[in-house]
Image 1: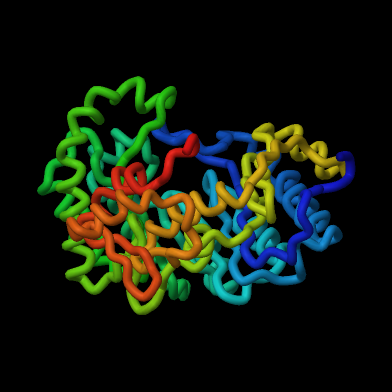
Image 2: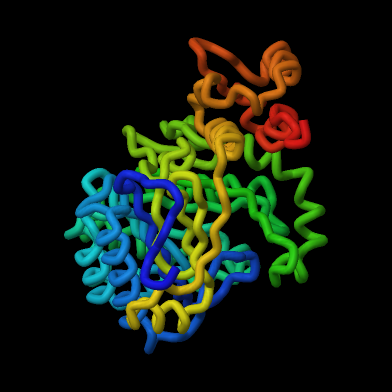
Length: 379
């Protein structure tokens, strides 16, 4: 509908806002996000479009004057000039609980670090590995020294909430390599860290060039995951979500909202929103988005219904990523009760005080457990 960001169900103003900045210095071979390389001449126009999209949602009432969390992801938001990124943050509704900005180490400067610290931003830094050989395999533009320098610059500027991302299961990565990466990570004392198994979706450049090596790595991945959990929990991190570890109550509030099934709004190309009974995905074309929003037109988007059954299924799938699990009453009708009984009998799942959660073994086998628990959609 021209001129309107419609949805079929009236919703209260969202409390969680995601803003997609697609620009990257290089598109890594395993990435399947909506990203754009180059196009520095479009940065300012894109920021203006993001603000324009936010204003339109505000006029409609879906977005208020403030939110609980604001997450600026990508892409690489820190590809924007520090002054432009600061202007974007200042123009968006302020976050009262958590503001997160993703950065890559090679883009961190003292000016950027000061701009983020002044706005009390939580910084999520894409480290991936401290091994130069593995960084080359992943096509990352930084170096181990560059990672350490970026952390030092952010801390010196006063960034008090720092999250570091790590990847395991990289082709050629030994147990000793992973141990060294974990040692380096712990030595830098981030407040939060995320550790992900390397996945390359079919059709990505990485899958084409390294598919065989990834398949060979598959048997070692569960052991790598065990090692990550043991090392980080021993260092005082709370394993609160499948791939997430936090110190001193520094859970990622924004992502926890996703896993808890809360509505959220996404701005920018490729951004996804869940609003009431609809899921909305913005189109991926940069020029079209800029021209339409800055020309006061609604850019292309796709809608899909989110009915009660879908909500319950997603509540189970996402909620069981969290250590505390889900309220059983929220997922009744989509849980195979017989399968649940078997999982409980084998010590893989627990039902306690009306909540369903997974024990350590169940969390390690998360994908298999979900496949067993979900009632078939044909039933």
